[in-house]
Length: 501
Image (cartoon, rainbow, N blue to C red; front, side, top):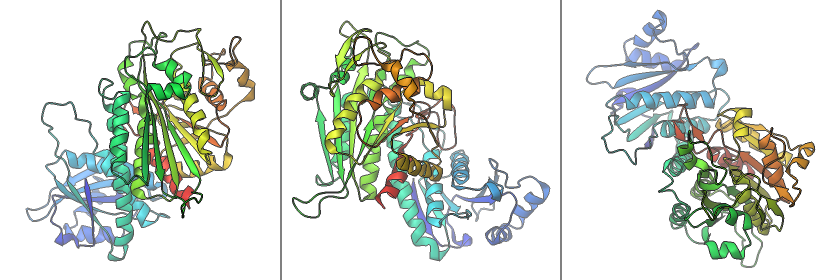
C-alpha cells in the first residue's frame, strides 16, 4: 500500500472511494464542507440517527458516476478520541474498502486533540497497512477481495511536510511488522533456523556493511562459544541450530580508533517449532507452536526498521534459533547441562526450553557492554493467564527504562504491564543437583520464575518482555488479524526513537 499526501480539494479527487472519519458529538468545518458537497446527506444521517459517528460503525454512501463512494467511519466521542481509537477506525476503514471494488482510495486526515499532525498521520497509515494484512502465501484459490494499491491522504497545504514524514515512518514500520508477521505465519517446515538465518542475511544485503553487519554461528561455532543450553535444546532436532548476530551502527565512531556510541542489545527467542521435547505438549493447538520464534521475528525486523529510519544509535540483535523436538538424542528430564556462563542447569521440564536458549544469548550480550538489553520471548503460558492476550508482561531491572517503555506503549497502543521480580520466589529455581533448575519447584507464577531464572545471566540494565499472549492472535482484533502479530516491534522502535534523543 502506497500513500500520497495531497492538499487537493474534494471535487478534484480522482479516486474510487473517499474515507471520512467523523466524531460522535461534534461537527467541524471539514464536515460542513463535505456535507455541502454531498448534498446534505451527512447531516441527514446524523439527524435520523442512521449514522452518528459512533465508534466501530461505518456507512457507505454511493455517489453519482462523477463522484467517488463515501465511506463514513465513526471515531466515537471527542473525550475518548486518541491515536489508538484512530488506529482502530483506520483498520475498520480498510476492512470496509476491501469489500468494495476499490483499488485507489483517499482519506481525510482527522484532527486528534493534543496530537501532532505527524503522529496522527503515522497512526492512520500504520493502521491501514496493518489492517489490510492477509497471509495468503499458501492459498491456491484467487482472492475475492480487492487489493488497495494507493491511498491519498488529504491535508491542509501547510501540513503536507509533517504528514509526509509521518506517512514515511508508518510505511517503514508497516513493512517491518508485515515481514515479522509473515515469518511467524510460515509453517515450521519452511521457517526453520536456516530460514531465519537466510532472512537475516537478505536484510543485511540491503544496507552497506558499515551500517549493518551479520554473523551466523553454526553448530561448530556455537560449541566453541560453549552455548550448552542452546545445544541441549537443539539435540532432538535434525535441523541445525543457528545463532544469528545482526549489528546496526547508526552512531559509529566519528574517527578511526574513536569510541562509538553506546549499544542496545535486542535478544529474540527463536524456537521455530516447539513440541515440548520429551515433555511433549498436548496435541490441541500444537500447530500454533510455529510462532514460538515470534521474538526472533520482532528483533530481525526491528533492526531493519531502525536502519531504514536511520536511528542515531547502535543496536545488536541476538537470536538463538533451533527446534525443540523429541528423539533418541533429545535432552531428557533430569539431565544437567552447563550454560555459556558456566552455571549448571538441571532440566526439569524440556518444555521450558525458551529460558535455556535465552540464557546463552543474554550471557553472550555481555561482551558488547550494553547500555540496555531488551529480550522478546513467547516464554510462558502463565503470562497469558495473568494478563490475557493483549498485554505484554514487562520485567525490568532499570526503572527509568521501564518508565520510558511505558510511555512508548501509550503512544503506540502496544500495552505493557510491569511485573515483579520477587526475592521470595528465587529459592524455587534452585536445584538440589545443579546451580539452577529450568522449572520452578512451585507450580504457580511461572512467568515470574522464568524471569528470575533469566536474571541469573545478566549484569546490565535489562527488560524482559514476555509476549506469549500478544504475539499470536486467536481472534480478530483491530489491525491485528488472526495469526502472528509482529508484537513489540512498533513499541520498541518508538522507545528507541526517544532513547536516541
